[in-house]
Length: 297
Ligand code: AMP
Ligand code: ZN
Ligand code: FE
Ligand code: FE
Image (cartoon, rainbow, N blue to C red):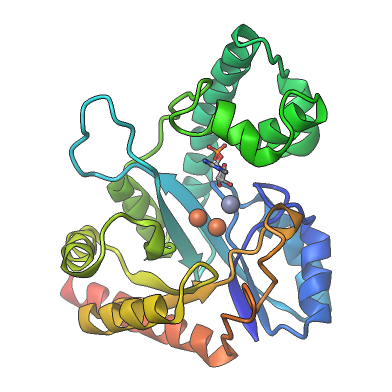
């Protein structure tokens, strides 16, 4: 069994990198992909332990990007999540540097969020949020502090009242466009895959035409298997991937205790089961693509 979409506590998961490696070993997994949001810190921390334990660790990232579609005035568009997988070579130093520059926009957003929460009479300091988000402070960490301080009764209420995209304390973060994300991952030797397509507003022919546009920008794959996908979704996305020659990717989107229904490797109620050959297929398809690209240059 393998799982190619997991998060550690270096982004919004609850599991420490070392604990995630131990859990994967306990479950008898053959490969583990760590795809933290906008950071490689979880992967870097897990690598020595995984190597020692004989677990194949797949370097990955999940970028939050802005769709390139024209904006509706006054309406904020939900982010589109883009996965990057480095299957043939590690990410370049340039890519790591670019990721760090992305962290700056998050820091600026967090400072604005602190100011807004203060104005709303529910103050949370950056220090308090950093207790939960040691490496990268995100909205889920603010949500936990709002709970701890008794301003809200649960995490969802923290989002609904204050932190959600359209809620009172909402602050827009500058995100790279989807096209920029695709280019940065590709330039650094990675393959790209559109994450959990079920969360996109497009389905059917609209989704197919969106994917064609993204393929022109350099998209390589589609996340066919995901905990949020029903069997019908998985069949639909699998067929789309075949028809459009996209590399199928998949994983549970494990977040530890932060999303307790999702189990490492098996997803929600065993709705995912990926074998090692699935990763081999990704690698072969991506290598063939790289070969074709270098031939045409
Ligand atoms: P950030 O990257 O700091 O903007 O935080 C994004 C994370 O917040 C997502 O990955 C979700 O885990 C969580 N999140 C965003 N919006 C909501 C919402 N409306 N309800 C619950 N969780 C949310
Ligand atoms: Zn997440
Ligand atoms: Fe995601
Ligand atoms: Fe994810």
